[in-house]
Image 1 (cartoon, one colour):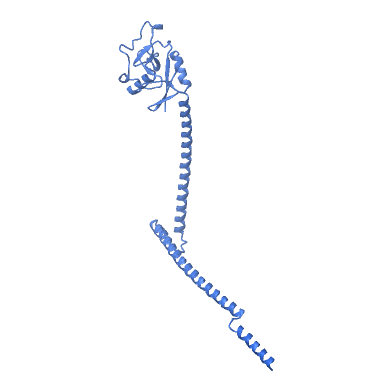
Image 2 (cartoon, rainbow, N blue to C red):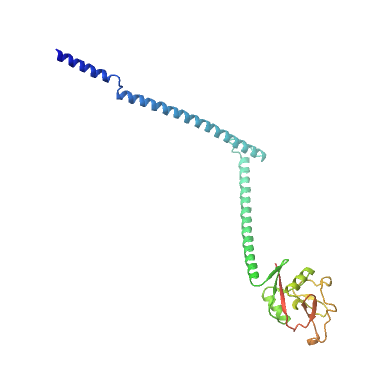
Length: 257
C-alpha cells in the first residue's frame, strides 16, 4: 500500500510541473495574431500614404488642365473634355503646322551656324598659316615684309602669288607703322603713275588722295637722269620718293583681313 501511495504522489508531482507552461499550439496562435496585427497596421499606413499621394497627383493634374484651358482660351480655341469639333481639329492642325515650320527654321539656323563655324575654323587655320609664314598683322590687315630685293614689277608678281598686292598707305598711322617695320630703309609700295604720267594709282584699288600722301620735299619729280628718263614707281622710307621701276628694292605686300 505504501508503494502505491508513493506512485500517486510522483504522478501528481509530474502533472503539477507541466501545468504552468503553455502549449506549442498556443504560442503559434499568439505569434500569428501578433504578426497579423502588425501587417494590418503597415497596410493601413500604406493605404494612407497612397491616398495622400493620389490626392496630390490629382491636384497637380487639375492645375495642368487649368493651364491648358487658359492657353486654349487665349488662343481662341474652344476647350472641353470631349471636344471633337471641326474648329478644334483645324486649330490643332494649324498649331502642328506652326510647330513644324518653327522646327524647320531651327534646323536651317543650325545648318547656317555649322557653315559659319566651319568657315571661321578655315579662316582661323589660314590666319595661323599666314602668321607662321612671316606675315604681320596691324589694324585689320596682314603685311609681308620681303627679305630680298627685286624690280618693282617682280615685287608686284611676288605679292600676287601670295594673294595680295604691294601695300597701299591710307593713313598717317599706317605710314608710321610701315616705316618702323622697315627701319626707314627704302622699300617698294604699290603706288605708280606708269600708265599716265602724274596720275598716281594704288595697285590694290585704293583711291589715291593728295590729302593722304607723304612725299619727300620736291617729290615726285620724275628725274630725267633716271634709267629711261622716267621715275614711275614709289619707295617708302620715312616719306615717299618716286624712282625708276627697274631698280631693285625689298617690298611690302598687304592683304586685308
